[in-house]
Length: 327
Image 1 (cartoon, helix red, strand yellow):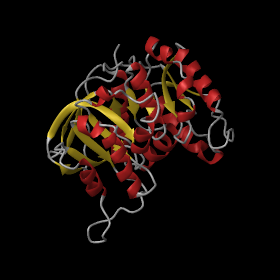
Image 2 (image 1 turned 90 degrees about the vertical axis):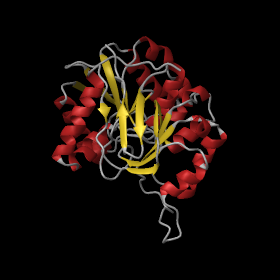
Image 3 (image 1 turned 30 degrees about the vertical axis):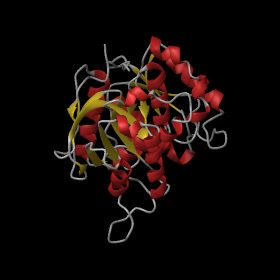
């Protein structure tokens, strides 16, 4: 399937921080304020969506699903809004996939940033429109909390990386690697990135909003996970096996696991995450790169869903081969 590239941002463009899933709790206001500062320092105007009123919520959601969808659709249709970044993740996107104005995305494709529950939104939008989704840091826990905790050098590198990705029509090339990256199975592959939180990749398979099977042909599957049990990850991987996804992909990139119970080492008798992955893959001889910094474990390297990438697991490199945005 063809990818739909969002339009490039320019200095002074409006970026809206929106409540696309969970609510804003009052104690996280300072993080949101810092996220606004980070985006302004990148050269953008910033606005908070109306649903980002601290304390407003419906159960665990920022609002009822139809209200979240109405706000998102308004942002998609507003020509002044040039990018949308989710305030946080949560448990809401499944409730409004059928209420999104997909035609508005095709008419005016915009970068949408976020991970966690937002990875489900990326998958559905890509399936229905081909939109390149920015599996990247959320506003409040990412730009507002994880970025300030990083070293000054890391923050500078991330700001440069995000701004280049959003504004320039040139490939990023090699993403900055660190010693945490591990080769779990050697090999090289080139293909389009597709993925997100693994439980959301598995869940979307039960809906009409799942990416078509051919979207995984020759693709590089990236995924990460927060919480739950190691056995759940094993089960999600087998959902992908039964869906035929593991037979179609050309490579895999796995994020740093966050708060997953039941992971260990051979010495403890519990499997490492690499053991679980290789067990599920069986004899599928594809490269696997593990412990890459995207997802819930800290400041995110952006993983643009739908963008062509090159993976060399043994060399521990991942390179973005094309621009994420178009003029």
